[in-house]
Length: 159
Image (cartoon, rainbow, N blue to C red; front, side, top):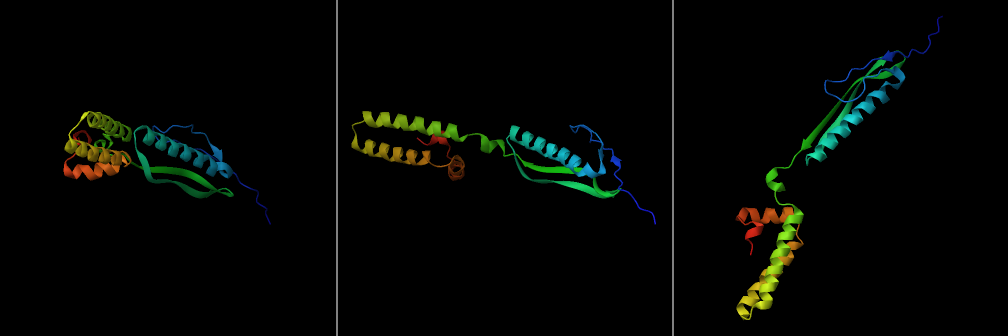
């Protein structure tokens, strides 16, 4: 009766062309950690790229190809996928800060006109416009754009 010892072969790895990292080998017992760490670094690289370009990762994952090597189940390959959504430039055109700045400028102009007018009808009209603009100042930019764009209205044409 022969007693077998624990077999822990060394596995060599290659990186995909253009993939950052070091192609070092690992024993079968540590191969899952080796391959998983490489794939996590790829995932983080995708995430950094998305954030840098104004995108968001909406789906993705890491898969490992596991097979028995020696006495261990070893990771012989890995794959990282990431679906990145980049909002269209049209929707990013007016940022929330700039639209709030535009509305605040319009409010200041209307308040100046309100203080200088003596006509009661014009005063009421200016007060209504001020109330509308103050209400719009508290709305999220995307909601405001979604409400006004179908009507053909833009922020600079409100007053």
